[in-house]
Length: 456
Image: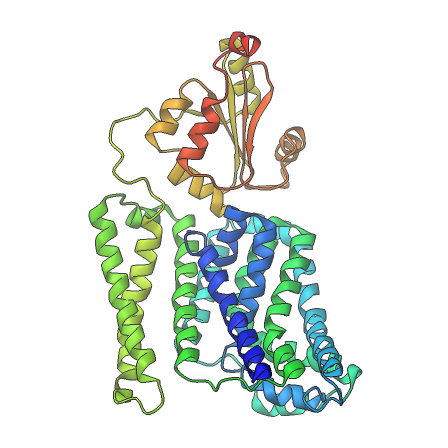
């Protein structure tokens, strides 16, 4: 009894992982991994990668392989539980040995990716890619290796630790097409950040999450629940999320698309939320129809088809609406940006004013969020009138002037917003998207003149 209870608790704890990962990024407008990274930092994002890997293991072309695979390398028939756990851990390390180099390579090639995201054709290609991945989650086509190749790969390695490690590498190859919808978003962000440590850590964590079920099944001989409605639910939610990511690339690159969703009124938010809710309800009916012996089984396909448009459109509109300032009244003058750093600093010295420097790029999603959600805020605009505001366009990160300014101000990533007092002392620095309230609080801490600095 105790053994069964322990196994059940382990499995329930594992099932909570994707919920925590999705909840952590739920409020972001930049999509899963990117939103978590910008709002909570690298440590939380790496932990969330574990959750994304676990969700990927629930897909139809990975989950059914769990009991088959652990029996091939002998974990379920090990002479002791410790040996079964060791074999299973070796198998998971094999998966990590395949995925971790992807993160390193992505980070090393990241500069090219970051600059290329200013190209509309690259953005269109990425939007098309995420759209295609979303379509696969909705059942338009299946992402999987041919069954004949899967059968051949499953015989590689043999029994024992060597076999377990090789099987881990092989499972990584088999799972790769299914992990694409989750993995692509992580890799794109790593390429933008050009951070080798982040790339290696995120992909290693992703591989650990992907291998959790294999480890649990092999180490504890747990009989996993069969696939069914819950698996269809995972695919449906993933499809909506991926479709939103495709839209987000278009929205953040093309102003006409952004103008379609730039409506801060509560009426727009209510309508968008209502459409989204309709899609969710239809999606839930589809999942309920997938249950075994469901009396509404005949409604599964029609409800899924009917749910896609309201769910995707509603999600795009509602999630884009949430971070916009709502119910803010009172006009405020726009921030006047100086595009020359030298001229801006000279003007600040001449007028004895503090300085606000914004490093951004057309391919930087969080920079767009600052531009459209924080800087237009009436409170931010009012406070900014006593600053000299300088904007540095770092879209071309290979330009000599961009490199010079990044070195001068110790900029290691985008966005970077720095506030200086009138005497030239750095008072505040942000390396992520921050909302208006936090931004205003930082601005108010900057003295208005060099005389005020001396009085502090």
